Length: 406
Length: 230
Image 1 (cartoon, chains in turn cyan, red):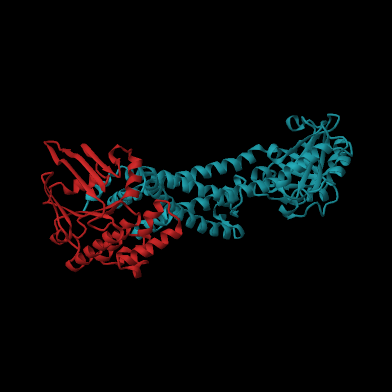
Image 2: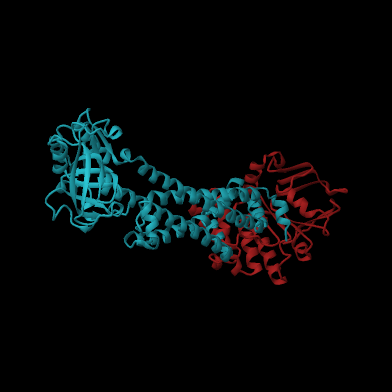
């Protein structure tokens, strides 16, 4: 009956309660939408990095990522690729020769990172083939085709079919150059990546550098589900052996993982600030409630309602008040976030700025259901905290004094 | 048999200027089944006296012994339980819980006592029928007249099967016809359940119905008269 009394008490002053419920609902709605928006933004960024730059897992020689030593390669990369391909959940494996070099056009030169890829294998790991905005993915030019980013094309002032000269150190540390022709220009919406990464065929760079034909610096692996990452990672480690290092995207780009964690933390801070602001409103309302009902509380004490029950009644009322608003906010926020999960929020007005930072201009929100549960818990905690002082005031009532009030 | 024994009960209020003796050394007993009016002018100390009897206001000195238990020796938690199980209250302004129906108001105290649901519901129906508003069991107080609300209050006071009922000016807010029917009802309940009723009042109609009238003035008993009434 205590729950029933508390619930009915809320509706004794409908306008006042509705104002608080509406405020809580609005605050939580904003929190849910912001959470879903930033989670969507971060996840899209991570997905993009995985699909265009990283892949889910990579195998290297242990020191390669630190030294980028051209001679520090996986000798039997072809054999390893075969074994890894057979692991359940692995959807693509691509061997890469990775080499830092100079790329020069007729006008200027710049440092770039070359990925020598087998075009048909690379498709199964990254989606660079879908990012071509001019030309085609390794089609149309037979000899030494190269894919370059839009930003690099602007920097070198080259266009489709232009010639660029790539200068590298070969396997014997001799400087060697090769002329490549632009077969396609890609754009990943990440200007930094687009300005410094070029893709050539594995066979072309292998010949140019006298690189062993079955070797690779990097084996990039794609999987069907991020949730399986730990299991598949373990299996790959078993296949690769102790001599090779297997790293997942979180280890390869820790800042990407921090991005998700930091985003989650910012969102909690954001929601806690919202709830903190609401807290004072709820305290105020509950204080009014307790003051108004001094006589009634006195009567309840007189007829035998104990202090714990009086306290609980006030706390319950505060929780129900906050929770009603919270649930309304979560529901409306959830509906809106659900809608934007399929229909992206259009930020193309600020596309340039977003792309500089590597973010999409169209953001698909992503609802985190664990976050919703945590928001609900935070709302309940807010209700409890808001009620402590008013409930304490209620207990301070002396029934004899309270009953004298006319 | 004595239900309440009061020994040298005193209540002194310390105001900033003077000490006021609201109740000044009262000693008196109440027997089972009494229908007693405590009368006196405003400020005579009758409400304070009733509050000390009911465990609501702590006396400065003296004892209130109910069923052999000196209630003011109990701690605050136990005194609340004692009130719940031994004393029924009827207040001047009804003081029902506005968000509960008439039935729920009666049932509420039994729920506090931890009585099983079936027993609660049965007794609630029985009591509301006994006070003549069995048909209003689902009505909220705001939908009831003053007289009806006070009937619910009487039913609520009886619900916990108390040793006695304290009624502080129960007729003060009622018109004369409601007053006489309420008094008739309380008299019936007094006889039916043999529950002791103690009123604080200055309503002549209550005095006319009472079988014992204790007059208090300046915190002291002026007279204690017994009447033989049916």
